[in-house]
Image (cartoon, rainbow, N blue to C red):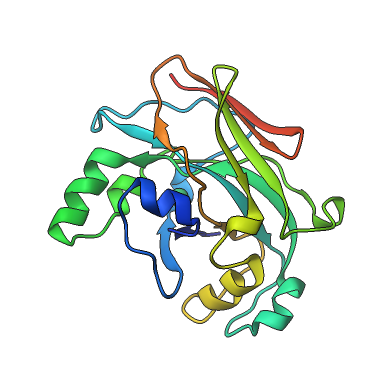
Length: 203
Ligand code: MG
């Protein structure tokens, strides 16, 4: 399986990092070794001093496809979840300054904790979905999918132009505003609407 991720998909988050608003989705990927499942703890890496959380809605691809048209995209995903796109912001900043790839800043071991997945049918309006992150019991990020620059169908169609999607692939759909650093000992909880989907500790 592969993990594809979208950067800069929420305007307020683009502003907080002083990034440019993209004309098309910004895509990057994480290797399968980035995955953390079953609420496994996240181990703070020794190569960074500024690891940030980014809570994101996940789509799980249900069917192989490439060059998918947006109107057919709903046939390719049937389940959603929530995950954290951990980012070594210090390494990413260095890479950005030099125009180098982000891979080590975004794809390092354990940088993709993911929840279990639930059927889309649990959520009738995907364009108005609340999701959030609490750190040590306090809200740090509260997003709504109505604020995405590119919606789920567009994203699935767009990424499939470059990468054949396969059953089991996971798409991170971008983070809302409020990103910030984690520290050893932090307890993270991620929600879709009021349902807690993911909970783990930073060690
Ligand atoms: Mg992200």
